[in-house]
Length: 237
Image 1 (cartoon, rainbow, N blue to C red):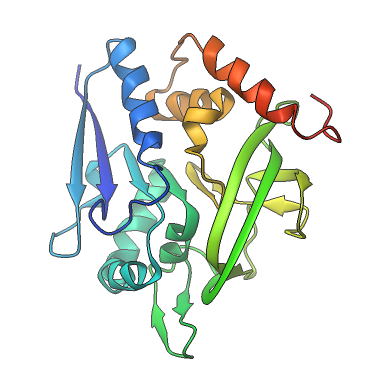
Image 2 (cartoon, rainbow, N blue to C red):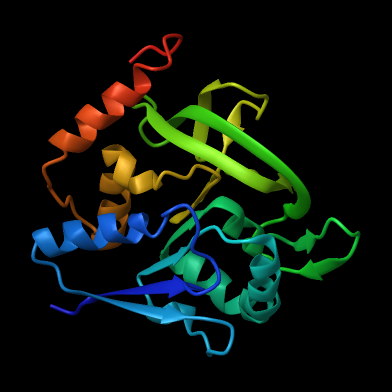
């Protein structure tokens, strides 16, 4: 069996809030199912070949590091687009989403191109936005997902819209939809790490990645999630 090849983009620049736990969740379950895998880390001095991988992950980082990564990734827009269209799984959390839009506008008014997979524009505001959210994934609307948002940037929507979640609960106005789901490209502001906290999402990613169900014991995750959701009495569990 050929190993599942995983690319961790900018692990040295974009690694805040423990979101590397998303990769830990995936690799732990692959290992438990006896599915071989290999994780490669690439950064701004490396040549990228996105089509060589089955999963590409990018997580949140400081704004100045994000701009350095954007300058590098903008040169790989066509290759990334081919990867998305052929079904490569992308997991992109926090402000790493800005890398895949049309451009990034900094707080000082300057802008730089991004990879251009989607029409949205990333805007770095420098203003801290924090919220707890409960969401329902469009591929399993009967399930509740918890996420924590901590950002100093925003996405200005473009013409394309492929929401990942319906917003069930938020303390602050974030709209009725959240995230991006286009083919197997998954993007969200929700941190946590998202997959470690939400077995529904982890199962979905594993299924898209391997083409089959990857069973695992999620009893501890389920218990933790239910206890977290219980903190939001307005939410029907």
